[in-house]
Each structure stands twice: as structure tokens, then as C-alpha cells.
Length: 490
Image 1 (cartoon, helix red, strand yellow):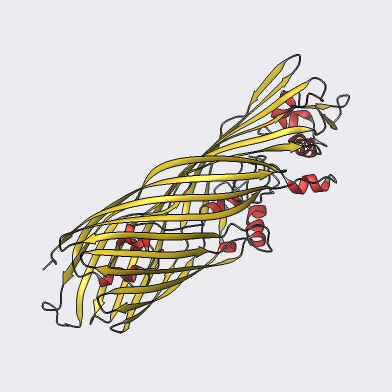
Image 2 (tube, helix red, strand yellow; image 1 turned 120 degrees about the vertical axis):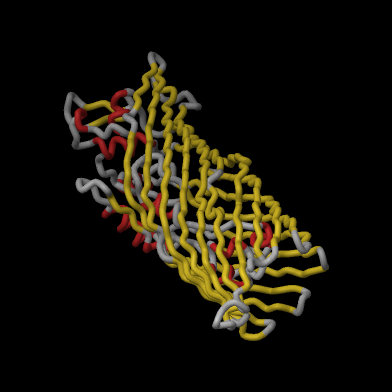
């Protein structure tokens, strides 16, 4: 597998690249844990509260607060909308998706009367699945470009190479479809046309990251709660993108259009360990802390590309080989802390802080003939420490509860390269009885990204300018959690 020169800006994969790169590392490191509707409705600010299954993936010390056993599951539906602006042209697309935010069970046992150390009040064991990231989206971006084309990038990489040595995933396909040609049999190339085209791209993505958790916890004297989680994340990412350049103005002799279709399918399995605690300072104040080790993934990619060209006299098509590649990926460790105020039995106010250094992600090869030195250098250069903040509140009017929250996930990008910070507004309500509970939640999330249709570095080296696509992403999520409570284990 040939190493490609990497140039990716934005969360989407560049059109020119099908290999594994720093964009993949960010995609699988940028986590926004879901879970139960109660957790989500309070903005995820549950680190110092506990007794919610979602905390098994965030602060495992929360399992130590459980005194009764329970089981629950939470389906959710998402609506994602993307508004993209490219060279003053606005395009809009949307997608709906259904997923499972959470399913799990916690067993709690009272050991205070059967132990020679009665200070240990309860022990707990929990297992299940929490949603960690959602990849469902649909983008459309389009606009006129009078200055350059994807063929400028292909020519840049083809120049100096014999046509028999072109890359089978890009420049060779352009050669086969007469979008590139040589000058008199040399290794210098000419393009089928120069700029002045209408460019458009549509991208549909699906999949997500789920985490299977196995957690243990304990309650020491109703004051100190401790827990640990073995996490087994598994992911799937599917991308189908279709890029076109069209001579809408009919000003380019012989040329009508070119089209590039990319299909990418990634799966991965990994493991991590989390340790957390909650300390009850007084009856109305709790503090918490947790640390997550990196997640260690084994990844499997398949990818392919088709390029088609249409001229006034003929049309051509060339298909890449089916790319298959296995590799390893390590996502960053995470640290978090929280504080919660318990206002008698009327309500709670809580706040969480999380720190993630996205520059610590790494991609490793399983092939001794290939390395990811360039990608890992780009990760270190382009990504930085992000600071995430969450606040939430709940007020109880038995048997009803109303909830609200706010969350802010800081930008992973260094030096204002991009933004990608995410702001969310949360709300919900629930009904909680002795043996069952039903909770509802709604989340409205907003994020902006810059995305380049192809390499801006190459275009800059050629003395031209490529404007980014400015995309505003809005996602609405609706969740419902159905749960059952059981008596203590004895």
C-alpha cells in the first residue's frame, strides 16, 4: 500500500484520501457519551451524582451509589441537518436515524450485616452498553470554482512518475479516464481542462461507537463511593460520497463532467479501563473524579473508488482495486471531575469538567513495510487539549421530575485550524415510582466545521486559492428510557 501525502482539514475525510489518517483518529476520539434519558436530559453532568447506568462509561464511581438493582433500555431517534456554504452557494441536507442509546442492568447488594467490616454498606455489579458517538449524517455542498479543479491535485501528484507507476486509487484512474494525459510519452502530464467548473459533493455517513461495560463498585460508610469499569468499545463507520465537476456554462471544449465515487467501511474493537470515585462531603455536597485509560483499537478498513468522465465524443470509467487494510489505533486518555449540590429531596444542581488531549491519539501499522509517521505528526501538530463543560439540574415533584442541562465540548483543533466545538441544550422529564421509571429527553446540538473538497496545500503550492466549505451542523435527538427496579440482593 502506497503512502499518500496527507492534507486533511475538518472532520470529514478529504476527497483525495482513502488511506488511514489523522481525520480517522479524531473521528474515533471525539466522544459524546449518551446513555439513559435522565443522564442526557441533565447534560451528562452526572459525575458527582451516580446511581445512573450512564456513569459506568463516564465516572464508574457512580455505580457505588446504587442501593437497589435495576435494568433499563433507551432507544433514541436523531435528526441531523447540515447547511453548507461554498463560494457563496448554500446547500442543505438532512438525515434521520434510529439507534440504541443504552441498555443495561445493575445488581446491588447490602453487605453491611454480613461483613466483619460493616462500614462497607453495599457492593454493585453492572453490565450493558452505552452509546459513545453517532456518525449518522448527510451533507451536500456545491458551488462554482473558476480557478482550480481536483485535476490540479491529480496532476501535482502524477508529475514526475511514469504512467505505469501511478497510484491505483487516484492518478491512475484519472489517466484511465483521459482526465490526465502525458506530453509525448513523458512523465509530465496535462489536464483535460483548466478550472471554470461547477463543483458538488454529497456525503452520507452512518454508524457509531458503542461501549460494552463491565463494572464493579462499593459504598464505604455512605460517604465514599468507588467503582471501576472494563470498557469494550466497538465501532462501525460507513461513508458513501459522490463528487462531481460539471461544465454547466458549456465553456470547456469537449469536456462535460467528471464524477468520483468513494466507498469506505471501517470496523473496530477495543478495550479500556476506567476508575472513578464520589466523595460525599456533607449531606448536600458531593465531589467526584475519574480517569479513563486510552482505548486500544484493532481496526479494519475496506475502501474503493470509481472515477467516470464524460466528453462530447465518449465517456470512460475506471475502478480501483478493493482496498483492505488492518491497523491499530489508540485514542487519548480522559480525566474528569465534578461537583453536585443536593437540595434536600427537592432537586440537584451538578457540574462536570472533562479534559482530553486529542494530540495524544496514535495510529499504528500491523504491516512492517508501512508506518504512520506523517499521520501521527499531523495529529500532534493539528490537535490539542480540549476542555469540556457540562451542567445540569433536576427538580422533583413526586412522582414527576423535570430536568435541564447545557454542555460544551471544546474544539480539538490547534492554532485556529478549525473549530468543531459543540454546544448542546438539554431538557427532559420523567416519572419515577418504586418499581419502575419512564424518562424522556431532548437534545439540540450545534457545531460548525470547515471542509476542503481537496488539498488546499497543493492548491497553495500551485499559486492558487481554494476556499473551504463552511458547514453548520444541527442535530436533534429524542430519547425514552424504560426501567425496572428490584429489591436489594441479600
